[in-house]
Length: 271
Image (cartoon, rainbow, N blue to C red):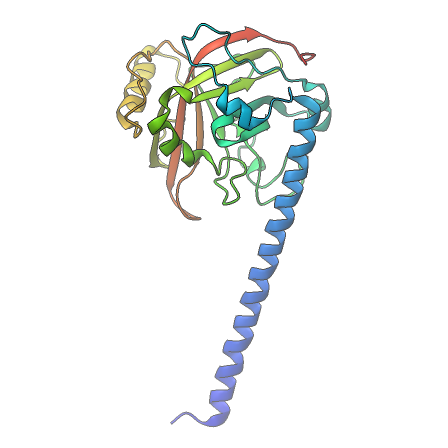
């Protein structure tokens, strides 16, 4: 039989541990909300000062289908203020269908922007960034962008919505990417869940055999069957978006591949 003093000791020990865990959880939750508020403020500021003022909702409605008679929906961006705010800014990404509309950054350390925001301040939300191996001035076969899958749909938290949206609107999968030198339009050609050890989908080979393997891979893995990707070729250029797919700690990744369909020269002074 356990003595009363021992029972009390166990009780108070359990209570103390619970209070510590509760305090840690509360602190983490408060920090997350603080980071989310700061991120929203940064996004609102850069969107107002640097990009054409077409609302994201309107952009999603007025998408110009690839092959249409009208001009492609190029996105002018003024990079002057962005580069002053963060000299590692390499482009602006807009996916109107899921409300992504933000500057992207790049550094030599792929870990840095997993826990830092656009102002380089500590943030659990991180920021969307280009892989250190991607050449943002002269895009290669496969340019890769990473971002967290957040419950508030910031960063790449809304990407999974494309799995259902594009089942009904496969031609609306337009991604706009503008860099200081180019304005580009991509069309989504493949979306699927894969594992973190799938190195092919985030690779960037230059030789034809690798390119052929890459195209075959993204064709076969595509989960949105309404997407027509039979015209993609090993000679095309692709933009790949990658984020976690599932609960925290998952090894699953959501891959979104898009094909470059239109491009025009730009400049840092574009408005």
